[in-house]
Image (cartoon, rainbow, N blue to C red; front, top):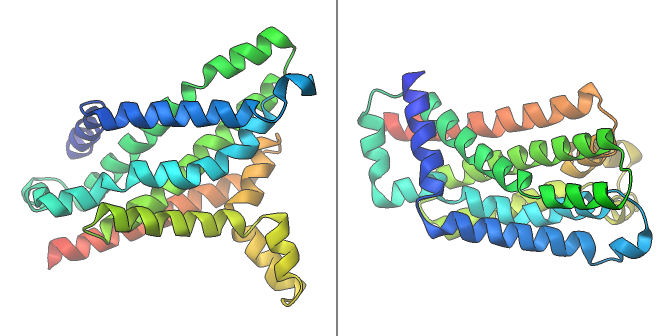
Length: 243
């Protein structure tokens, strides 16, 4: 546990030790606000954050891999990963420490969108339960994308390559559940295969939770997905340490 906290605190502090974290926060807050308000938010006369939660998966496809690409690729490029493995810290502690620190950083970024909540509370009487599940879905999706990015960062020494592979993987997981994709696949795949692909997509489970439907299958999807990708990252690094 001591090793985990040491890695967690070091990693979380490192985000705010460079300008990159602040650039990330500014870019995220700008685009999340722009996408939320660009489609006639005030003209709709509805006190909700539907447009924000609608656009957040596409925004995360690019921004979360950008936050994850340095997790292990940078350590491998600079050689500091060899020093890390000589310390009395297990690979599991190191992986969990880095992953949870990065996830907390993303949660901080999501929390900084609170001015939107204040705005719609000022303008109307929003459904706070729906807002809470929307933010829960956003945090779970951020964790899922981050786990994917963590794995690809572990298998590459190059941050750019790690970023590109993560974006592709996350985009596939999102677009697989889009109605246009489902309609296209249904033209040549059986209904069972199309439903299976839809169930594996981020989009369907994200939409369900963000719409206020808290079901075990949606929460367990994100938990299993995060655990699976983080465990795969641990296996890759464990093999490197053993080699």
